[in-house]
Each structure stands twice: as C-alpha cells, then as structure tokens.
Image (cartoon, rainbow, N blue to C red; front, side, top):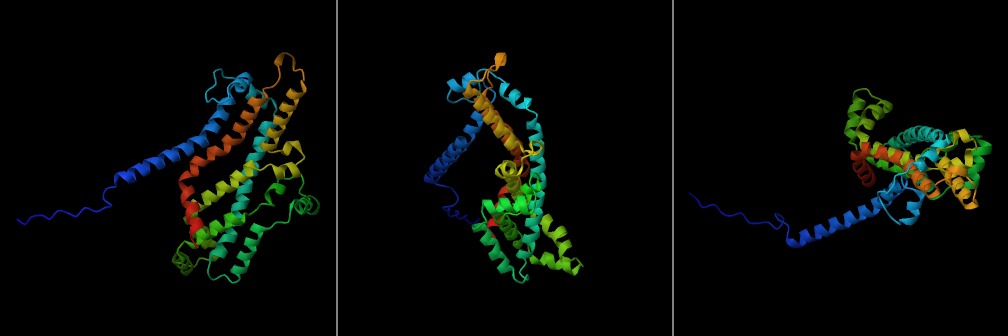
Length: 303
C-alpha cells in the first residue's frame, strides 16, 4: 500500500494569531460605533417617557425611574398631530411613487447602448446635480407661475427626480444582460412591455433601496412645506411638531400660568416629538433591509 503523502499546508487554511487579533479589534471598533449611534436614540426614547424633573436632574439614562405619558398626552391633545401624520403619509407614499416613476422611466432609456444622444442627456443630468436655480426663483416658479401654493404638488413636483438616485438605477439597469431584452424582442415585446415585464421584476433590490431614499426624504422634509403650505389642515407632521415645540418652549419661558395642570413638559415634549417623527419611517426599513445593500452597491459600481 502506497504511503499517503501529507498535504502541504496552505497559509490560507488557518488564520494566524495576528489576523485573529486584528479581527477582534475590528469587531470591537464596529460594536463601539454601533453603540455610539444607538445610545442617543435610546436616551431620547426613554426620556420621552420620563418626568420633566428627571430629565433635568439626570444627564443620561435609558430607563426612567418614573414613567410618565404627559409628553404624549400633551401632543395628542392637539388634533393637528394626527392630521399631520395623515398628510405626511400621503406626501411620502404618493411622492415616492412619482419619484420612482420619473426616475425609472428616465433611467431605462439612458441605460440602453443604442439610444442616440444619451451622453448629452447624461451631461445635462450631471449639471443639475451641481447647479440649481436658487430658492427665490424656485419660490416664484411654484407660487406665481404654476400656482401650486397650498397644494401637495408643491412638495412633489420640485423634487420629482433625484439625479443621484436616477444614476444608481441606470447603472443597475446596465448590469442586466442585454440578451434578455433581445429574447423579449424576438417574442414580439416592445420597449414598454420589456421594461415592465423583464427589467423591473429583475431590479427589486435597487428599486427597494432607492424607494427608501425617496421616502425618507419626503418624510423628513419640512422646508418646502413651510414655504408653500399655509393651510393648517394640509400641514405635514414635521411642521406640526415644530410648532408644538416652539409653543411649549415659549410658554414656559414666559412664565405663563397653567393653573392646576402645571406647565407643559417642554423637554419631554421635545423627546416625544422626535420619537413620533422618527419611528414611523424606521418601521419601513426592516421590510427592505435584505435588498438595501445589494441594490445600492451594485447600482453604484456598475456602468
């Protein structure tokens, strides 16, 4: 029986002690960075259920000694909060659909190699990433020329497409094999049907990722709403919460007599408004987390 020759050990079979130490250090650094990012939000969430006195006396805590719902009760007393949440949901959902429609329909033709003049169009897209008309011309355009004041269209149309997000989608479309499009054309499909039945179903990761970008932008945006929306029944939740914070702080600083109810918990209200404004959009993230990394990375490096 022939003697078996021992296999030569490869340097890649087993990591050395130095590599393991480096990996442990990297894990510690990543864990510390994650903790630094999470702790402030945990403090805000815990402080929103704390009493005003505890927030003043304790510089940092996660679990309050005494739970209090005064801040949320104070916010809920103003019915505008629920109306603002409804308006924000409408603005976010419809605005994201508009953004994705415009971005995808522009990204698909620009991703095809046979489109004539696509380089000129791409150069124009890059220009709008670097330059804009400015706030005053935009305000005059929306209010006087288009007459969109006190309409949600004033929040949707100015940002109907983000050039950066469109380029990410375009690069992802370019990574889809052209043979699939050719096969669909042989089967009698036109460009529109190929786009709907072939390209979009294969682009789930990038569509989910870019949709999240657009949705977060619409949810957190308040500057355009502050400029173009004067009707309180159409205010988004960010404007409503901003007004509540200002009113609470101004009443406390002026020494206004609130009688037996006492002054409103200004610091706790600030924490509670942060939670109300943040939690709804955070709920969306777990549902598209599995698409997020793949969509952004592939769409950003290909092409």
